[in-house]
Length: 393
Image (cartoon, rainbow, N blue to C red; front, side, top):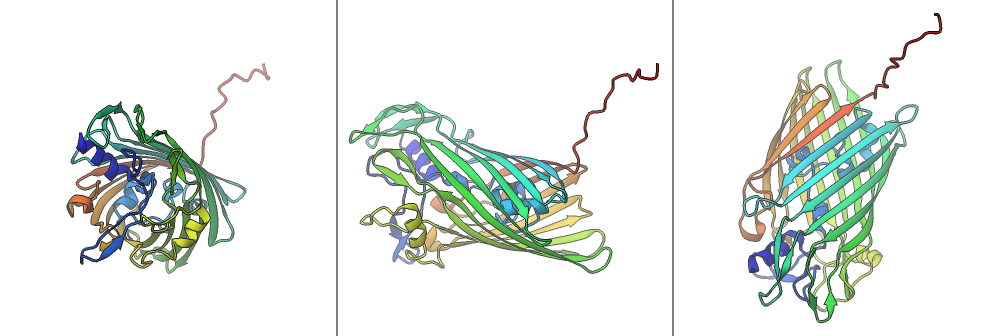
């Protein structure tokens, strides 16, 4: 039964087996044998990339051109989307090498409006299922079975501020039932589903330089503070941070003839969650964000995503990327690749994470294909009036 507890701990990073297990950071040893601290949070599914396009580019997506999945990366990008309406659906298997029934599903959509289409509204939903789990307590006794699940709902609004600049915000409701179906009490504390609320705030700048009829360059910059909101609690005695994050990204696109286009992207991300050790008191949300810049090694806590994308005739795309996390802060490092096809109003993207590392450094998406299906149009056609006109009869 212990493997089920390990599965929950690795996947959710939230303690539910015993009353003194915490979903916050714990001290450890780094690769050199010295002391290291790790920032962990509850509901980490909020940081799983639900987009096969960026997933193939090392999880870089803050500043690349907008599509329906911008709701996740940077909602401020949507007024610059090349289509007025868009919908995207993504399916991501999770821990595929170990279990067959864990997955993340994502559905997002947007609509632009206004005289010059300078406004956009957007919605999305994430659903993370951990399949069927047999739960045990801290000494191995069975305490029931359940179907742990987590989900979130988003609604966003974004607007152009100028020809080159836009901003946006989205609100989010989060529900986490990681002990669903279990009746278990430790030290008279009962575990229950957790609920939280958060917001994303983003800005986006993009400028296109026309060189000739067939050649142009585009430079883009984005910044987003995501999941800024309340803490989440699974019992009456403790609450934990959700993965509040600050991300910045740049992207450079070069169309160097009528058929070929390259995009290069770089994202940097840092959790806005303080490093806590066993003797620390709990921070409230705002002091926690402030102390996230005072605790731990700030440079080591920055993750980097580097991606490249090539389009041929805006029809076929090939992508590759690299994700880096400092060895003293989790040591996730992996290579990604993928492809995309654009046909009429439909676009299909897929990504693959090359297996690397072992144990806790092995990414749960290793050796996994994930797919996104997108649909985008400029105009919604109104149904034609098929009634007979008898006015002249």
